Each structure stands twice: as C-alpha cells, then as structure tokens.
Image (cartoon, rainbow, N blue to C red; front, side, top):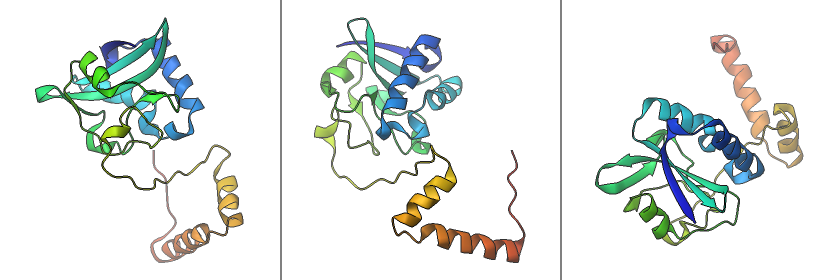
Length: 176
C-alpha cells in the first residue's frame, strides 16, 4: 500500500475519473456524499480538505476523503452535512487502518456513518444500524412500482399527503 495525500482541489481529471469508476461499481457508495462532485465542492471552499490516494502498483485502489482538524484528527469531508463517509473503494477491500492513518500523518479518524461494507475501519465501529437507500436509477415510477409490489404503503401515503397539501396550501413548485 502506497499512500499519497493531496488537497481535494489538487486532484486531476484522471483521479476524478478513477474515483467515479469505483463509485459507479459499488452500490454501497451510491450516496452523493461519496461522489467526486461532493468532495470537489467541499475542497473548493475548505482548505483543510484532503484526499488520500491508496495505490497498489501503479493503480489507485481507493480514495480516503477527509477534513483535517487540529491534533492530527481527521473528520469526514463535508462535516456534519455528510451522513455517509469512509473510503471510496471496492467492497471487500481492506487495509490496515492504523497504517493508513499513519501514512496520512493522522492519529484519529472520527467517523459516525460508515457503510458496513467498509472493512478497514470495522474494528473501530461501536454500533450499527440499518441504513436506507432509495434507488432511482430506473426513475421514480419504477421505484414506486417496486415499492408497491413489495407491499409498501409508503408511496400511497406520500401521494395522499401531497394531494392534501396541494388542496390546503396550493401546488408545489420546484425553483432552481
């Protein structure tokens, strides 16, 4: 394992492309908080934003985005806004967390919403809970139909509340 640490804004097109490639293949990384765009946006405004590139041979195998805090502490990039964080890596990949932190010049990684598929930090997890994922890759209608077929009443209840709100307040508008 070779680790290079860059400021988030220092990553080049090839690194961002590799990041996207890894994220698109891993369902557990579907959250926008794992996207290169989120880290780029944070890195544009936060000088303490870092990304560790974990390499094996000449290939980047993982990205570790974080924000540098005093006392060699790393926290998830995007701070309390990000409710999914950790390594951007293929499922099942595992590195020694202590060696990774040492290579980054860190003493602590303070995380709280790590996907269960992330084995690198698994020894340091204190509790787990289910996480929810809304898969809209095939569009909202396909998602709604899948939920109805599964016996969920959620879509029906949301539509009823939407109709009630429209009647009482007026139709919703989406303003860019």
